[in-house]
Image 1 (cartoon, rainbow over the protein chains, first blue to last red):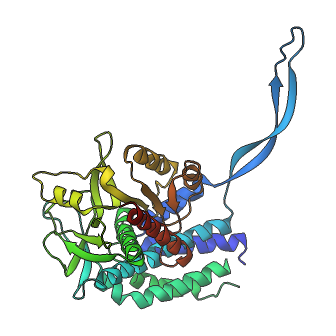
Image 2: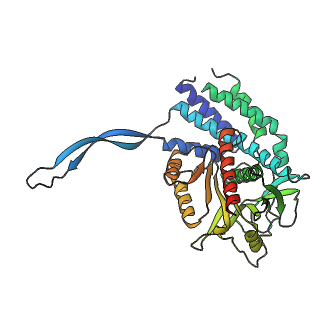
Length: 154
Length: 224
């Protein structure tokens, strides 16, 4: 298990790697999650005023526990896990998802050459991603194993 | 397990070749994710005994299957967008589409990331003059898909609740690739259909979603 200070160093290095591959949006997302903190509930004793219907009787205060929502900051190890999971989603989940989509459609269209993406606007450029995804499957599976190893080390 | 010294450099050496080059924005990631969920809907239809044919407006077997990346209309000819025709024996035919606009009860247009609707409604819209949007009442499954996005806050859950108030689809799903405690709490409290952690590596979660889609098709088969 990593020490908190070690986790800070790995987080920083992994962020640098992600940024160098154009995943700025992913890092922004993780930083947003970290800023929100983790949510939990906490029982806190509160005192409610009980108003009596009898004139001349002072209001009574009754203590009881109420459940409040609190947010706590993530630990350095938890922050690192958030980053690893985000990276895994983008660099493993999406490429495997594209392959799954391609294989599902190819089961019905035997001469399918690929899946493409295009905005619904005049003269939209069609971006085909399948051949690239097929070529990189081995790297994706290797990366999946490496990120799992990193998660286990955290 | 201690951290292996070369682990980060190993990750660095494969990260570049694993990432799709198109993945430089969060909206690109969302589009790829919608395509994946469309595939899961089709797999669920097959699992429930349906026949799925992939088509486009112009072709019955398109060699490049094109997904919309911005909301549009079934009748659009900007590209030859793909869709799935789903048939169950002795039941009205259905179609599954990605990124089409539908009309809510208030006559306001909404975007459906993935929707399954009656084929006759889709045909009506496809063959119409102008951009006719299908009526929400003719949609049997809708999916709101959310991939890692820095706006994945409670606002999205509230937005989905608003969507389901105007779009009375029997099976409206909110599907996300990660966990989001606040949204899940909100949608559970409101008895809405939602799934989290949906990505290919998470077989348990993915199967649960596929079964939920299958249940929707089972209900359709019982109803019609």
